[in-house]
Amino acid sequence: MTNKMTDKFEMQMRDELTRIEVDINPDLSQQLTVARRKAIDSHTKPWARYVKQILWPTAGMVMASFLVFMAALGPTSPLLTHDKLVVDEQSIDSIELLEDLDFYYWLSENETGLRG
Image 1: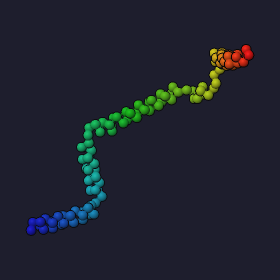
Image 2: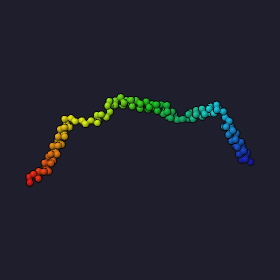
Image 3: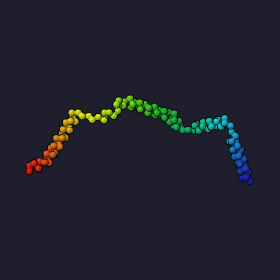
Image 4: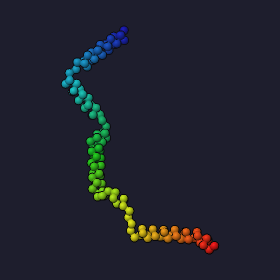
């Protein structure tokens, strides 16, 4: 008997709540939304608030400072120094040495043919 009464009471309450939800005015709905968000925010972890309020803005400023620093110190004409072939006196000497080595290698191979 108590089960039937409880079921009947629950059904009446469910119907009443459904009716109230449909008929709620916008101002009260706004107040409930603000109260719900305030309650949720009051239970956030302290480190989460620290990350949200301090760490993210600080990390953003550090990254922006780094980018400005790198732009200020960057090359004035990017990639031009890497595209040019640098030929100086030492590189000319090394090219001549390689040609001499090729000649001596050819001479050593053909020495047996020249002696007959």
